[in-house]
Image 1 (cartoon, one colour):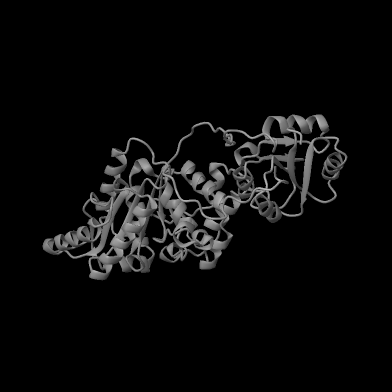
Image 2: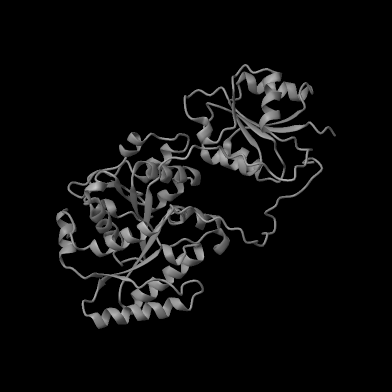
Length: 432
């Protein structure tokens, strides 16, 4: 077997001239290439996950399904991505594409691209090269995730925090409140007359492009007198099935390029495939997992009742297992009693519930937000929340962000983990 053999996947319109020409070259051994034709992006993903090694994916620029997720799946499998006949003027390198070819490329062009970007299957390297594209460093905002069990008022707390930060003259026009919950309720809480665009449209727009800042800002609303911009959430719970992982990553990155601070209203469920054995559960919780992983601070909202404190401690333990460490956690007890001894009892009870968990011995004391009757009336009337409601949390958030010397980056697990049976695929003579 020659050491200079490339196994190439192809995805294009059946009548594309380069598609049939490449197949003819491979069939007649004019080039040392094994060419595997695919009819859809789903077939490409299925073949990449089937255990056989591939050198590259040659995909037509007009193919439906050419997006960040397809490129990422190909790179994860160790193959390069080459776009043939790109029909749109977009930043292909930012999308992760390794190279571009015209539709009338010849055999020399083909071999030059394969030699530069792809690895022959018979050549066993000591490590898989990093195919990630180098990006110039650029400015990024900060993100604060607000979560809590149902009925704790987490969405209202997120609104109050965004309003309080937005009232600072130095932050005017640079604060966004984003609804990343499955049951998005910020549209209702703001009495939004329109329900589009929202997070679904923002993620869809990032599937194949990197949007400029002005276009991202055109997809949010500016509630009157609130001091922040609003990104609406999903219109229906089941719409989470339309959100793609890499597209959502790019959408969150776009928001961080466009605003100084993002306050994200998210769910507290961050379970994934490793905890449940179900990839569907991980996909359903994708928005919460992505947002909390990238957040600089995570605010957990609860109430001072026995059930509320129990639910709050359970949420904190789940976030700790997910990788949120104590310096990033802020506990908030909403609708708290005014009596000092009642607040002290709630703090002590919460500490007892979470101290038994490993790594949670140093969670700071909670922030107390008093029970105010004018909150519901402000929401009912569609006006600003009381100014003093979010001030204690705003002060704590500002202090925490000032103490942080660097922007938080998602944690990369380096500890060894058990291999799931069947996850490594299978070796065959054909693959060799």
